[in-house]
Image 1 (cartoon, rainbow, N blue to C red):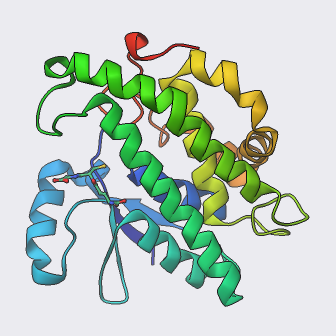
Image 2 (cartoon, rainbow, N blue to C red; image 1 turned 90 degrees about the vertical axis):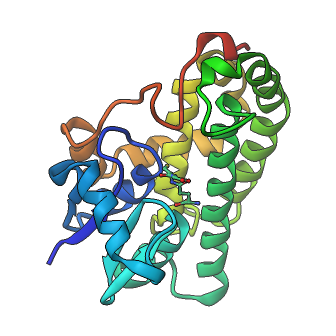
Length: 235
Ligand SMILES: N[C@@H](CCC(=O)N[C@@H](CS)C(=O)NCC(=O)O)C(=O)O
């Protein structure tokens, strides 16, 4: 039976990190809110009660709900071999995934530094300040960390011989940063050759080729997490 994945229907958002792992591995899923609408998802979340999600994405599995991107991917990794079984390696891949989560939260804070409930347009001066710090300090720091991770093992992938959910998430991170900060990424990405090579290899996985060419892959937009506001970008 296909997994039921629930996420906001009109943006890639955080749901995309789950989708990419499912698509790359050829695991069947139904993107429930794309079919039923956001209202159906809100009703579904309410119906899940005390053990339901705080926020999407979430999947239905093991007779209940599994939420939080990194937690979902930890589960799928175990079930479908999308992460090493060796405990130290498995937790290291999870550590990378949680670091992706941290970076995604900071990406979101660039365009919403004051408050997530306010429009970007109402916090533009603060966003300009946050963007400069993110471009100058945080992007290089996170990317250098991931670059070092690509050297941890021989082989094409973070875990060595087989790709894992951390690889597909790094792909999305690079793709999103290129959309959000084209000038900054063009200026610095050659300093992270391992990360870029990994991104390119993930894009060539058969499941990824199919997915990226399909209408299931929505475009980036200024409703999602990676938003391109030209005034926030600089080399
Ligand atoms: N840490 C969570 C964050 C989930 C999250 O913030 N989801 C957003 C959409 S990308 C949302 O709907 N948030 C609603 C809220 O925070 O009230 C994860 O990685 O899954």
